[in-house]
Length: 80
Image (cartoon, rainbow, N blue to C red):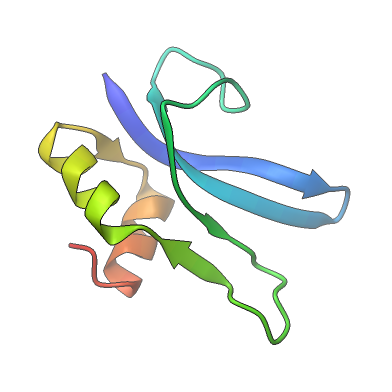
């Protein structure tokens, strides 16, 4: 089964997350099928959240299940 979730990147105490589509059986830091965007929680004046809406809708139509956090981000950016 496919899931849309956050994959953590970045340095210690400076988190940066990619929104990725991956299989449930893979580890969160493993290879993703596709990257849909990013979340930068400590962005100052820059862009904090970017989501490719078209790709996200395609993966949702294919049956990918978003995690709770990603679902909240999708609602915030009006993807759903």
